[in-house]
Image 1 (cartoon, rainbow, N blue to C red):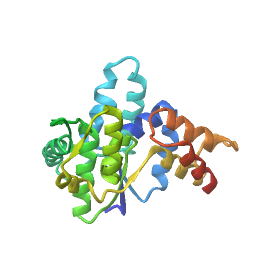
Image 2: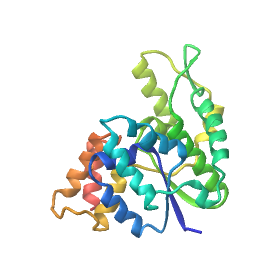
Image 3: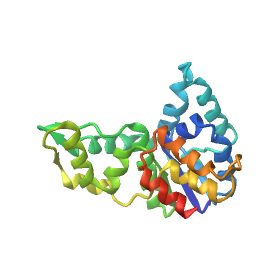
Image 4: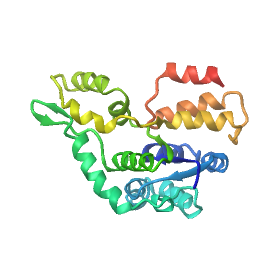
Length: 227
């Protein structure tokens, strides 16, 4: 059994693909002590759906190659029943999208892909398998890490009072989450970047930020100081 599992949501993979960083991701897999895993729900978001859209077809084909080459694998390699993931995903999706309400109406927070990644993470934790979630989407991360801040953000965005069913938030505690920018930092620290230039870390972090990673300029500066 692999020592660790890195579970990918769609966002970081799409961001790496759009920034031409999939070769670096392949190199990271070679030194990672475990598996890179995606659910079939995430595969639908990164390959099955975009491969039929001309604008995104090339990225989808590149991501399919990662599956063909076993860089990305599916939960079945860890003896996880994928039908159970699908069933539990729908249950957790209903919980997530019913936890916050505005004037009595539930607020849609997350979608199938990131929810299935959360479900898989929980199932692996219950089996005693150390795992980490790669998620860029701010709402999902705040739901798991800072739900009080998420409430404030929603109220600011919607300009109205938001109520929270706090008992439902227990379903989202205990996850370990990493963003694509932090994966990029790991790639840089391990010397895996193809471009050898003093500005490559800065360039990579901002490229990932502009393609969807929820990270502030101050956070990027802190990462650069750690390099």
